[in-house]
Image (cartoon, rainbow, N blue to C red; front, top):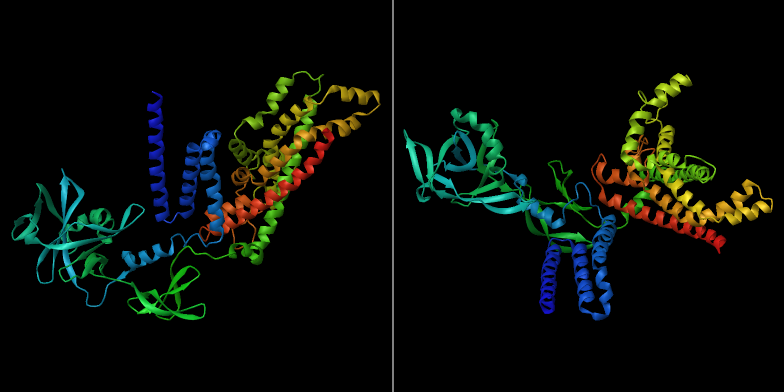
Length: 570
């Protein structure tokens, strides 16, 4: 039995290696080099842990190692790589993918002069009285020769959908179809027992009622992406005519690859470049974008691709005044927000903890339960209640009852004034954070020996002296690391900011979507996903790296400072 399970184990390891290596090569072939390398490293490590007897204890770490690589190391590597590229809106695909698309996408085609045109008729198979997507296309040349469109072969796919297809014209008399005619006109086509009835033709006004179904179910989704090759090797595709109907005409691809002399780093080299087939001029390639020339000789951007741009994203943060200005404001506010959040939550939490730690206080359980409610309720619910119930400038409790009725003042602009918006953010964050500080402070207070207070009382120390000389130093040996962690958490506390103010109100005269209450992480999120000019993943990644170094630096300094409290405990 032992040998049986051992064989099963070896088989599982073999299958794991086979599928993992296949997956790694598949990812490498698709251009996901970092993830592919991650897979290879994981395979080597897992095999080493299992096959080497000396590394037996490490076998239990395999799940953690897998998660470490996939959830931590790979995202870090991908972020660093993205920070040095122009990856974002307009630059989503690789250079080769862009070239393939320019060469094959039906969008980049044109109808040449003296183009041939074929009449076409659509025959649909019905399910009862409902037309289906099963159809036949009957083609008629200008000489009256009839053809049937053959099977569509996919030439290019993208995201699981056909981008370009190709079909041959098959002479009707050689297609092996059963043709049903009435008064000399074809009214149905029968193939393999299925009957296709005459449905639509742009040249037949009586079928105009079926035009919408044809365009929505057959014309645009399928036929507009298919090039039909006639016996003379002309390629035909559906294009709009002057009357708005779709006609089957000869098309040519707008761009083609050809050799040309180009200047690279001051040298003339022969290189394969894209040419405009109509103007016979090469496309210009600059900063990860292909440009074409219009009739006035002006550059027109055609399509961009992901390219390496070095440290431009980082230099933009400091050199571009429209970015560096708001970035500095956001950074200073981010630091202030995190520091004040920690300070307020700690002071209020410690105050409540000192009260609850008083042995003469009755009803402690009730007070603890009530004070811990803000922590127990999900933060996103609390934030939305504060936003809509308290800080609403028109109907909020604070403005409607307290400010205008009690104090007879003007309503505060909680969401439109930068100062009051920051106050609102700090109030809500303090509300959410003080129960945590109260809980950890209460636990730390209860660990301080009573003998220290008794000795201090005998020496005549006052309450204030006992707090600052005994309670606070001993408290900080436990709390200081938690304060550092709380600072780092609040430094990246995206949820509260985004739910309460969405970073607003906006900072005027900036080229990026910066707000007065934005912190760096919410600013980065806006850049990556909500920027008005599109997404800029490269720039957002650069800021993410900067945030990492800022938080790491601040945490390092804080830990060094908090280490001094440990000396008190020795």
